[in-house]
Amino acid sequence: MTLRPGWPEDAPALARAIGHESVVAKLGRVPWPYALGDAEAFLACPRGAHEPRFLIETMELGETRLVGGIGISDVDGGSANLGYWLTPNSWGRGYATEAGQSVVSMARHALGIRRLTAAHFVDNPASGRVLAKLGFRPTGRIEPRTSRGRGGEAPAVMFELDLDDDRCAPMPLAA
Image 1 (cartoon, rainbow, N blue to C red):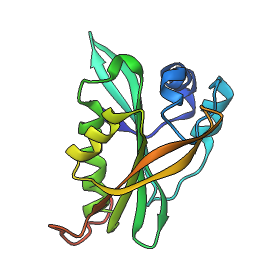
Image 2 (cartoon, rainbow, N blue to C red):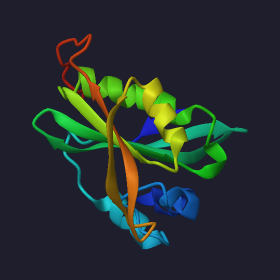
Image 3 (tube, rainbow, N blue to C red):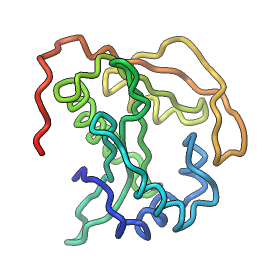
């Protein structure tokens, strides 16, 4: 598995990978239907150094394949949100956990983020299992969250991860 930034030429592959109603219904900000223009706009949107986002790729039969995405957003004073998605034929293969471990480590050691939050819709318990494997703990709160793919709000289980546990000093990012 490889994590890498998205480039404009990734738009067709991104639109195909995320363009499943079963994926978009598990996300908050992604529209349905998801078109090539949506992928182009997403890839063109600038991000700060403290809000990295990556495409998740695998190598299968000698071919690189885009299977998902992961990123950190909404950085606010040492706290940020972790989000991720996978294309349906990649569910259950450990890609979200592996990608999440890398991004959580980056948040902890390189970005100086002290706390990560995450959420999953109550009808997506597999995402909760991924978050638990990454060390997130449920807050005990279920809150309504907007899902553009669902066309409204749905209940979501809230999670958090204290990155000050076992923390090293932040390392600078290489250019």
